[in-house]
Image (cartoon, one colour):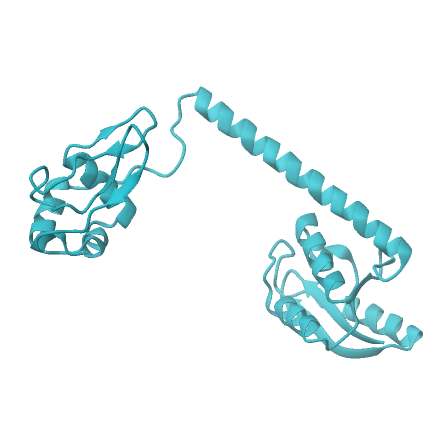
Length: 239
């Protein structure tokens, strides 16, 4: 059987040969063939993207070997979520995962059972993290903290002038360092929009209502919720 060896050390001063020697001996005892040794030096196991690990995954997808052999779980991944994701990928492409210290081989029935248990632990980890995040958000709201990104401050008078000068919304957004969506919302408010009960903005249409900006707005009827688009008119309405 063709196998790939993977080893990782957290610092450059550490020697991966301690891991590789044990892996080579195991391969020799089984009569397997080593296709390539993938070694990451100076990378934390918490990082999901590592040069050698990325090359190993690409080689696995290319069908260059039938199994991945590691010295221990934490040499491959520190996160249960990352480990389960990698094992699931290997299983989908019929590549076995073998951990020497934990005596886990996903190609065996016991290995498959262990994979199921590890998957359940990963789900538990995700649920605990989600519960902690939710509790933290609720506490922040109770203390009156504003959540989300900071509100972008824009100069509406400067925006009006840029629009009158014929600049497109994209160019103005880049000039004032905000997104097109934020710019459109501020322009709706600037020309007389008001918030409905549902929190949506309704702007009176027609060049006579907003002659500076033209009729470049989306108009939603409060009673039906239908949305229509009136094409831009006038030299200042070029997008």
